[in-house]
Length: 226
Image (cartoon, rainbow, N blue to C red):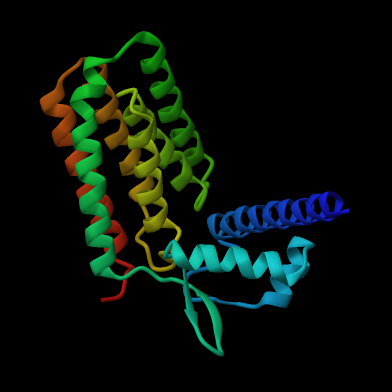
């Protein structure tokens, strides 16, 4: 009897965990797609209806996202999507540069035709998104271009940390007010980085990455409040 009760309890706990994970992934996807935006207050009931689950897994998922810094929680008011500050963006871009610049030399040392073809493919995906005027989604393609040459180091942790930092920037800033034309400039900057890696020119690759990150930070800062 106790074994049956314990088995049922374990099954319920597993189901709750799976529903929480599903709710977490869906809410983050909504942030990615700009269905919910930085500064927006989140309503439990509305989210539960949209996700087709009870309020408990939604509450659990929101708590996790708040602990990760994607949401703000105010007692008696609930959760709001966090809007990045300049201080936060400065610190995150600093970390991003440390990871990318630190990875470049090792990535070039371990380059091969397969890795280079994959990097070229990711570069092309971003270019196609720009040509098709994809707005929010192109940030994901930009992320994966950079993550690909970081993965060339064969250190899986570096790419994971990079993606976390990148998402902490772009999931928490609004796109309204950003100047136009940056996407096409990014295409040119990706070309510079790719060609430097392809020709195994570490010095140029490092400089192009630094310039690219600096330009990206200035672009985001144009719409980030003090």
